Length: 341
Length: 288
Image (tube, rainbow over all chains, first blue to last red; front, side):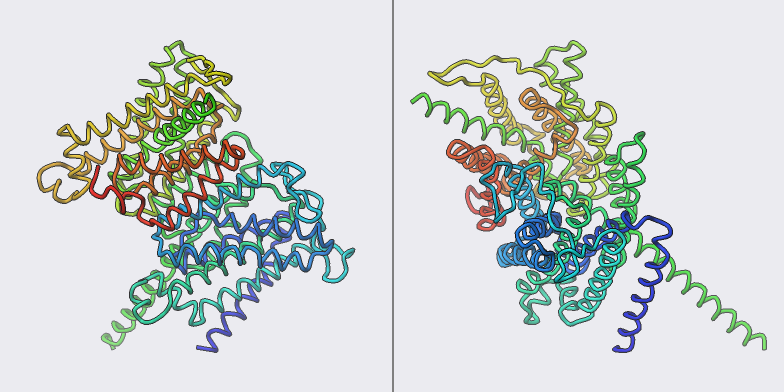
């Protein structure tokens, strides 16, 4: 078991290094950075939805909260280390409260969807209405519809003048992405992760075995939120502005589309779905013949109808079945050979 | 005194518009347990249908009450046959598919009508109550909402069609055994639900500037009103619309419209936490 684990980690790191070496030659690092950030966001929902069975319609809330927390804290501190940590902790704390309210209330799937959606909307509406000078946190004005520009971006910890931007931001994001991926892998292998999958499969059974499903779901929800918050904080650094659009319904919709297209119950699926669709959107944005939203909608409908499992499980499944078929035919040939002899 | 009347009118109007916004979704959800997240876009399409018809020279009221529901109903029918029919019983999948549809419709409308605000003027002029000016069109919306609720109740309670519909709602398999095809009933229901969404969108169109993404503003309100209403169709709709409309307007008058909206949403979260199956799962049990 342990050696298998170790092999997987080594593989992940090797693949990541290979990708890091190759990708910057294909796509510029500025675009790659945002694709990685979206992949991280996709992974956050993929974790709680695909493995925990918690369909959160408002993952954008945590993403936006992370970005806003970072921006506000960065203006007040003038240094990026503590703001980055806050960008993880604040969404996590918020998710703990929200999750405790929902899971201890034993709300069903649909109701969970409504509440997460509504909370996202509340944040969206509130942030849009904070244009006045009375909405100030420390030195940071919330800025309403225009958002918050001009905050301190990522710097080497302890050296506020040593900015990390462009290529170095890309490598930082890539490194953190790898860490997050390894963390998620480790989490899912741990007993906490396996019980989370158990809860997804059969909640009653796991609770009868004596596990506190409410607490476990709340914690998993908060972990997902902290990853989304981290992605949000990086997004703030990449875009150098945060706007209420981060909390919008279309942002939430997109995260869900990434997970569906990539494939639930896998770690790669949501990441590939996120990066792939974001890149597709980027390419589509360069033409004006067909509306972007139309294609995203069409993709979602077609996937739900025809490939509800998503790309990665479907490809893995067909690969596995061809391998099995080949093995079987090999065996048949071998047995025939024995018979001939 | 004048202010009290105005506030009362505004509260009733807020409740009425919530009823209108949610009626189509309530019919589809109550009947088929399908959450149609493209509901807001159906309303948006109703609005565009009205404006197009008015620009072609059709009378405003005919456009709103006949053209828009019919057009949107047909669109709903097509959607049901092509997409939703394949997903019955898979609640989350239908939500996702209809969310995709909503994006699809936004995209199509953006390509056809452009991403600009269009609108028509309200066909009924305002009048003063004491020192305050009241929008006369609000009374039309209140009237339409009342007629809608009465009609829904009458059809469900008093007609054979309503009986079949209620039967299918309770036990689809039993209705099927008695010779009524649930497939056809669902199809008809979805047509009616879409037509109601179209009507709501059309009636509300003169009050808002229409953009392709208008639907997003409706869907959340409709969604929470229907879910908080619970299992009973008419009573649930009325009670949750009543609660939310009241909360919204009280906070709007006391503080500001934005606070009113936020208060509505917070009220929904609290309500769902206290009554997770909706209002009518606890109160008015067994009513229609």
